[in-house]
Image (tube, rainbow, N blue to C red; front, side, top):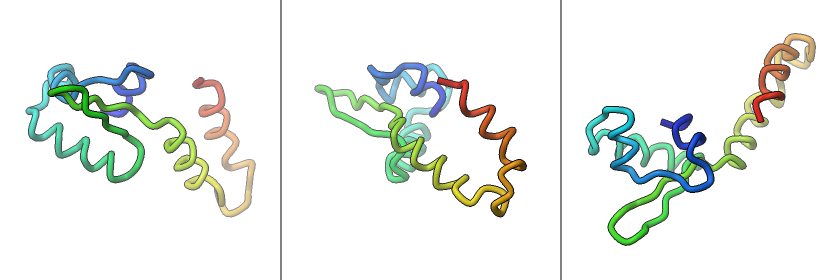
Length: 90
């Protein structure tokens, strides 16, 4: 779901469209989106009758940096493959 939202940045997608594309029941999708929104990596905005969801890439960046801050107990060479994979993605 998050990868799908990243694909549709910066416009985002309506909850129903996300559910349709992922073939997930709308109520299930709403629950999952709510969890990601409470976690701070997804933002929502109401547009008339639809709720548009967007990936919060700044929050994802902060979360990723937090998770790898003390990477591998201070042994940077162990984190090199992870950093190398993350660097070229964008």
